[in-house]
Length: 322
Image 1 (cartoon, rainbow, N blue to C red):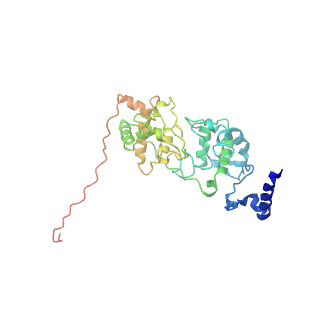
Image 2 (image 1 turned 30 degrees about the vertical axis):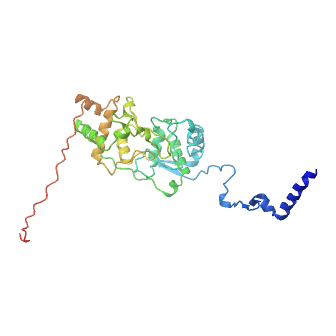
């Protein structure tokens, strides 16, 4: 028992000479001080409940209300997109590609210019259409009112919806006739714009850059394989030629697919649409009919754009007279 006396003596010194607050965490031994401030302390405790803000959506004559979609979202959407809309639902770990993260308000399929919020109609269409080559199904079990309510509910997750308006839908000109010349021009544009670097020379999603691509959250992402589609040949953002046109002009935000609105003219975009349809070899459509009529051969593109008029000659004499 005598061996404990030194320890008692040291302990008496510590508790006598060092304030209680030091023992509790500010000073542990002589010469060592741990500085703790409020800003270093994490926010601990149960995760707060989702606050359902009074967001609305407007699709035609239907008005959606976020509060009315809470149960539908939790039952049908939270398993993948997460209760907090952060793409961390219990199923998300098994999914490829990953679910959309609503907290960033970055959406792939829009009718609005790159970097802008989609319209309510865009989100409404996405829910009803689903996404090809993903785990997002076609939610045709919902009524239009339910879909409109879900559009409103999606908006509660990002403050962007409180401070920004949706972008203006782009103007889509009438589609010109499909000709072998338009297909040929589209082929030339596919090469010039280097679409093949991602989508591959035959549109099979195997270009030299394909294996290096990631989305805005650093998840690997695969380019679209045009040749893999069936007779319907759906794209992620739709199935019509207008849907493909919108992809060129708006880009696919959150992915390496940019907007070409500042690079190509509307007529060029349509020619590119016509060429891409020929890469969908299993699709029955006007583009493949035109190509078959040309014996399956796309001729080299010949630019028939008139050359700019020559500048008028300078008739001034060296002395400055006429």
